[in-house]
Image (cartoon, rainbow, N blue to C red):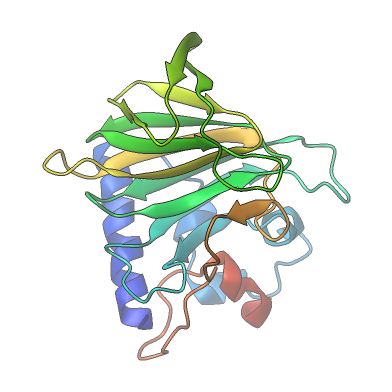
Length: 224
C-alpha cells in the first residue's frame, strides 16, 4: 500500500470515530516528530503495540480484505500485570477479516454503531480444522446455538463472546454502511496467538510516496 493511502484511511477513521462521539487518547494524533525522544515515557505504548494498526492480510486489496483499528490498551504477558486489551475497529461493507481463532485469547466483539457486522463461525477440531459441531455462543449474555459455518449478525449495540478455538471471520453487511466495532479481550498478542485457517500476511508492504501523517504501531521501531 502507498503511504498516501494509509494517511487517507487514518484521516477518514479519525472523522468516523468523531461522528460516533468516540474519543481517542491525545497521542493518537501525534505527528511522527512528536514521538522523538519519548520511548522512556511511551514504553507501554510501543512494547504493547498500542495505536494505529492496519492490515491487508497480504492481499493488496484493502477494501475487500483488510482491517484498520486502534489498540487503546493492552497488556504484555512477559512483563505486565495488565491482563486485558481493548480495540476500536472500523469494518467496511463486504470488507473481510478472514477466518481465524485464538489459542489463548477470549474476546467480546461489539457492534458500537454504524452498520451491521456479520460473523461466520466454526468450531475447530483437534487438528485445527473446521468441525461440523454446533457452537454455543453468548450474545449479550444470552446463549445461542449456531450451526457450523452459519453466521451471526450483530446490529448496533449487540455483542458476541468468542472463546478460544472458535473460528470466526467478519465483514460489514452490504447496504448498511461502515461498522464501528469494539473488542474487549484478554491480553492480545498477534505474533503468537492468531491461527488463520489459510495463511495470511500481517503488515502491508508500504510504498513511501509521502511522509506519514500519524505513525502505525509497526512504524515505532523506525522513529523511537
